[in-house]
Amino acid sequence: MAKDRKIDMVILGLLFHENLSGYEIKKRIDNSISFFWKGSFGSIYPSLSALEKEGLIEIVPCERESARSKNIYSITKKGCDELKLWLENTKSTNDLKYETLLKLFFGGAVDNSISIRTIDEFEKEIERDLLILKMYKDNLSKVLDCRDHVFFYLTVLFGVETYEGYLRWCNEARNLLRTTYYK
Amino acid sequence: MAKDRKIDMVILGLLFHENLSGYEIKKRIDNSISFFWKGSFGSIYPSLSALEKEGLIEIVPCERESARSKNIYSITKKGCDELKLWLENTKSTNDLKYETLLKLFFGGAVDNSISIRTIDEFEKEIERDLLILKMYKDNLSKVLDCRDHVFFYLTVLFGVETYEGYLRWCNEARNLLRTTYYK
DNA sequence: ATCAGCATGTAAGGCGTTACATGATTCA
DNA sequence: TGAATCATGTAACGCCTTACATGCTGAT
Image (cartoon, rainbow over all chains, first blue to last red; front, side, top):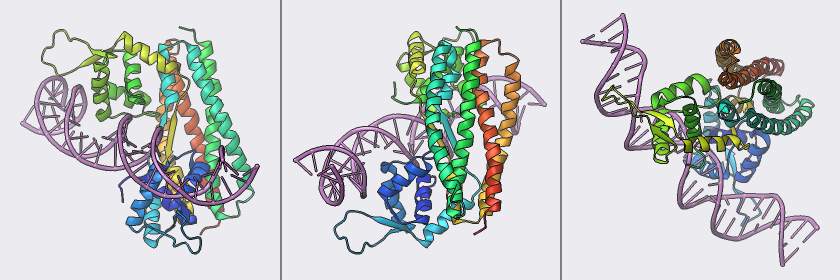
């Protein structure tokens, strides 16, 4: 397996729950984990081929419905083992790239009003996404008796907690820029 | 200029404040912005060459101290313009990849104790980094009369706010996993 | 009939990391 | 004199994105 191709783990993780096609995997990523991980078709399909070649996943032979160009994959025993190995490894890499903060850090080169606009834009996006996260939170909190939902709930909680922190910061930051003398 | 090579902007931003060598740029990145952006020598040196070829930066002719293999760069007028253009563009990409959350999301495949260990590891790292951030915050808060420091302070505030959110979440998440029945 | 969504895949290219190679300087 | 740090750079490689190419299916 590729050394650090985390998309492999995303796919194995999703297939651990249910059999899926590449297209469905993309949808799962977009709907469930895109707040903290992304994936494109250009990375998903090659990864599926590679994982199959290595015997970590396999195509589910489709009964009836002939001539359909749709490949449903399932995880193999070997794939489960690989997934668990990764889960049990405590070392995780969290790679964050905030272009917003980069622009703010270099705000000395422009008028404060520019930096405030950068914050406004960030805030707008966060407010929009927070609404979605809170909706998820409400819905999931009603079905926490199912173990599977707990894990989804945890990541949503993470989103809500950090996004609310972002919004508090937006206000602090703007106030500071407003009370600071302009260039 | 390369379409999306943000390292170019990091370099231009740093050179806007002071003339620096590639090695010093690396240090500035590690000490000041590594919480939200990273850079390696393997990306810095090629970027410096490219930026110089395009006339956005230039080598400061070093007086005395001959035969020193040290290139100090300064930003040009053209470089400043490019930097400002980027700063004025409100569209920013914040690209977050939390392997920690990925592992938690797929926690259904292992015992809850594994997920708790993943959280513990994350918490340890955050606690360590938060100490540094708070030290920065304390020091910077005393010199906010200098405009330059305000921008650094803002990014540190961001770090403190989000990291404290992380820690609150660690406790919530662990509690949830402990009160949930084990596999 | 046509448009949106389902579905798979490839190609080009960009960005970045790690590891390697090399050598100067400084300080104990 | 030896170690740490300063200092620059290249090569290999890996990951991923964007854009493109193609065709089916189902609803209006």
